[in-house]
Amino acid sequence: MDKTDYKGLWFAPEKPGEAVPGLLHFEKSGRITLDLQGTLTDHECARPQSLPLILGTSIEGAMFTLYGCIQTNVSGGIEGVRETSFHILGVLKGSHFSSPESIVFGRLDATFPQLDWWVGNSGVKIDHPDKETIVITKQSSFLESVNLPNMRLSLGFSYTDHFAMDEISVKHVPFISIELTHEIQLKKLLDLLYQLCNFFALAVSQPVYPESIDGFTEAAKVTIVGKSHRRPIEIIYEGVNYGVPLDPVNMRSMLFELRTIRSQFANLLQKWFEKSELLRPVYDLYFGTLYNPHMFLQQKFLSLVQAVESYHRRVFDGHESSPEQHKTRIQDIINVTPEEHKSWLQNELADSNDPSLRSRLQELVTKYSFLGFDEEFVDNVRNARNYLTHFDENKKRYAEPDKLFTYIRKIRALIECILLTESGLEITRVEAIMTPIEKRRTEEFRIYDF
Image (cartoon, rainbow, N blue to C red; front, side):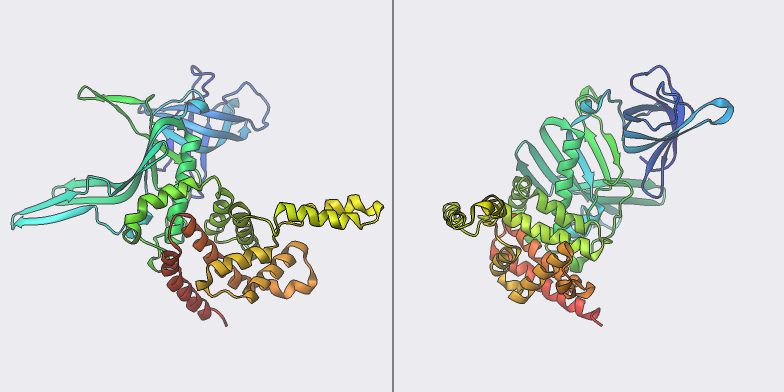
């Protein structure tokens, strides 16, 4: 759907017979708004109301379902006709859904133009069998397909053809198809897409967004030549595939391309989704900094340190001593403590068996020793974190902007090693990927070190 103003008739699902005219507007800022010549509720006050869904039918008969509709304004309008405005989170073109729970899909297709260089293949082959003939062959089969629990994920190309008297063009763009064993709600499907975007963002070291999303459901079918097919429902979601940057991938920043991990592609994706629940906080914190490059240095630094701590707590043993040893140690201390202080001290020592940030960092730095990070780096990160958390003036010098910039770069490399390892790559393969990249980043950083 062209993301331009769209006129039509809109109505609330609980009042399907009371249609009011309106304008669906895709703003340059990335917001989607709906302006109605009328109201959809019985409320006469101008207090904002929210509707989970608003159904619409265009002049041409196209069906729309607007999802997550937040009323932003009600005014008197012309000749006493109220004008109502809504902020819309998502637009589904091609079907009406009666409730948020009824928005379910069994398949999702999403295009990713940013992944052209990452895929590295051309979806089109051109042959010249003779002087008068040109044969254009499209890559119709998927490049890769991966069977995951309850779904099959395939990577291929989507095509757009243009034919004219003096010109023929074929444009291809990488796309991912997620075919599920059973239909799931849109929210869950978008979460799968979120995890997939994170995988690609790790691969290319920058934010990756889908350009277009189509969902397929058994509730929306069309018959073609006597055969029933699910028709595509076009999905536009603010912050997912609308109002987001689609910056070209920087080849120098890539951690890996498809061709370098093609034999392991299925295994990497399987591990990525398998670990998604365990490592969700790590994903959210790390990719939060990647998708928000304009975060303050202090915020970015603290998020990355928290990601390291969360990872270590979830994956490693998480205790300085065994629970039995620690329990004995605490009891020995309590036994020699004055009675009036025992209760207080016992509360203070409750979490004393948790490793310190320094211990956690040291263990990970040792594991990925090829990065060349030393104990001074570990101590500096700990001191900077402590200052930004407790604002101890004695440690303020460790959190100066130029130092934070260096720490962020190095912690980011450490987390990338972690995510590559957790995705199933052997440590030697991770070293082969990260060593030249960290060397290049260090050299590039020196250019800005005035």
